Image (cartoon, rainbow, N blue to C red; front, side, top):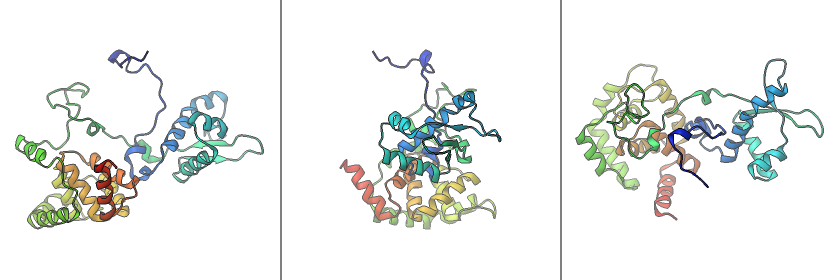
Length: 280
C-alpha cells in the first residue's frame, strides 16, 4: 500500500537524476522525455562502469549496454531508440565508439557546461508566504525573490492575473507603455557598453521583474531566445510573467513551452494560447 511522503522518509527512495538544465536552458527546450530519461539512466550507470573497469587510458568512463536493454527499460521501440540516440548525439550529451560486430558500443557521457547551472524552482509552487522560513536557511524565506513588492503592487497584480490573449490589445498597450516609460527606465538599466541586448529589452526586463541590473548570464539567455523567437514574443513573455509577479525563470518557462509547441511568432503564440486555454 502506498504511503504519503513524510519528512523522515523524504530521502528514502533511489532516483535517477535528470539535470535541471534539461527543463530550464533554451538549448534543451525541445528535448524529448525519452532522451532525458536515457541520459539519466546512462549517467547513473557510470558508477558501475568504474567498478567494472570500463575506463579508457585518459580516465574517461564509458557505459556498455545494449540498445535492446535500454528499449526494454524505457518501454520504447527500435525506431524511437534510434531517434533518442541521435538526439543525444546532436545535443552533444553522448558519444558512441563502435567496437565491432555483435558487440555493444562504448557510450561516453558528456558533462556539458550548461548542465552545471543551478536554478531556483520556487516559481513552480503556488504561493509561499514570506513570513515563513522553513527550508530557507539562515532565516531566509524559501520562496523569496530579489525584487520585493508592496501591498499596493500586489493589488495591481491580482487585477492583471489573467491577461487577455489578444494580439492587437497587447501591441497597443505595449506601444503606449513604451512611449510613457521607455526613456527614464533605459537610464536605470543600461549599465555598460558590453551589454548583450539592447535598451528596449533591458527596459522591459526592469519593468517586469523590478531589477535594474541584468546579469550577463541572463542576457546570454535572453539573446538565445531572441535568436529563435520574434522579438515581440519575448517581450510578451516578460509582461505575462511580470503581471503575475513572477521571476525571469517563470518567463523562461513560458518561452520554453512555446518553443516546444513550435510557436515562434505572434500569430503562432496566440493561436497556441487560444487552443491551450480552450482545453481543446
